[in-house]
Length: 79
Image (spheres, helix red, strand yellow):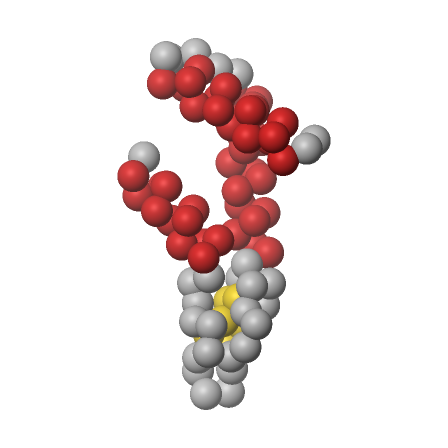
């Protein structure tokens, strides 16, 4: 799927769930997809006990959580 198609699926699911409808299989698939993203952005801990995201960090000063994980956390906390 294209980026736009993925966003459309999520938008449709959001609307459906807020109206009390929606396919459970789509909700489960979205949950699994978000989990995979979070798993990909797992922190790496250095010998100095600092953490950074292996996917996003451009240098060791980029602290964990990365912007991707921060965005997911923000949406989950606002839900």
